Each structure stands twice: as C-alpha cells, then as structure tokens.
Image (cartoon, rainbow, N blue to C red; front, side, top):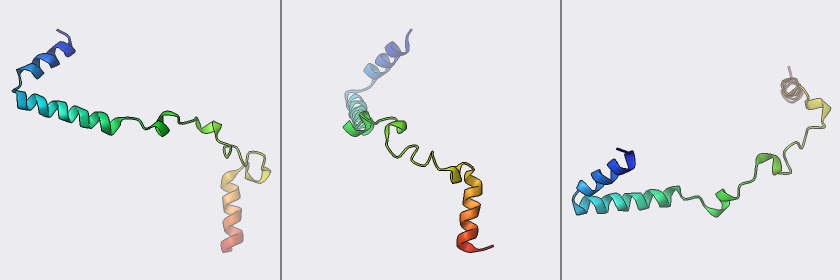
Length: 77
C-alpha cells in the first residue's frame, strides 16, 4: 500500500472537524512556504556586479597577510 493511499485513509478516518483542522493547517503551511516573486527570480551570486570586485588587487592575494598588515597600520604593533 502506497504512502499516499495510507495518508488518505487516515485522513478520511478522522472526524469532519479534524479534517477541517488539517486542511486549515495545510493552507497555513502553503502560505508560509510559498516563494515570493523576489525569491523565485533570485540570480546566482556570480551575476551580481560586486562579485570579483577586488580580484585584480595584488595586495589582497593573501588575504590573511593583508588583514594583519592593515591591523598593524591601524592599531600599531
């Protein structure tokens, strides 16, 4: 017996009020998880112009060293 058939049997075995509650809850979940138009048309990160903005900067090739240098300049030490 498939899971869908079993769910339908279980649903139909419930009293009408419980069936209404399940349908109401399902409507709530559908609304809560519905994708907004903005979420549906999300572009991949690479499509945004800021991605790769600093890729040509030679001073940032080793980011950890770059951060240490900036901190040393700003905070001393």
